[in-house]
Image 1: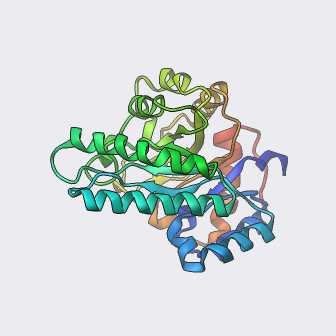
Image 2: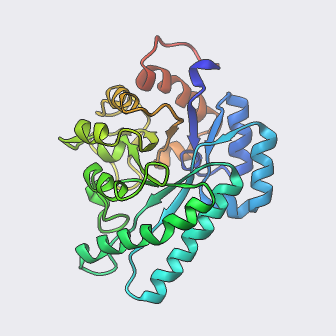
Length: 279
């Protein structure tokens, strides 16, 4: 088990499983951490989700997701702040101290204005989150997602936003799929020292089959995953390592097979340890 003591299943990787199935799968596979998504928690109910995870002996690495701050009207922006506050409460109830923020796209063509809305939204959310002991983890997405998911598209941007606050209030997520391309990546990881709140792994497939659903299993693409892990650890992060994969072929395969595949690839391409046969 010690080889896998940091391994976390980000629930989207087994999207066709509900939360109960994902928890039971982690128990069977000996994966000690899980990162639920809010829509899966909502399906089961917050209290029942908490009990299920606790009774299984799993730990919650993060809750995904808050964010989505930009909107055309003040009323809609306030509505989104309220939803983020609910996400903070859910994270605290589930027993994690990390809420992942996917910051949101521009509501119109004013991308600079959208980025200001993101900064303003985080500023409003910080004191509320602090009251619950929740850290806000800004996840920069790959630039190809700027129009649909996030106007925060680099580690530099995420660091700049986070540095307005204490490390125990706001930090960053390093997701290899989103940041591997950045020529300044290792400088920015070092800059984030002390405020890295999450590390997500998958791979970049060539040719990329789909903008959203094209992530690969670790080892099937071009990302130097182990090198990025070493840099993140050198910057002080020793927390859970989440496997987060959007890929219909992986979603369609047997979930237990996926978890065993994750364990094999985690050893060989994330930790880079001698391969062992996972039964």
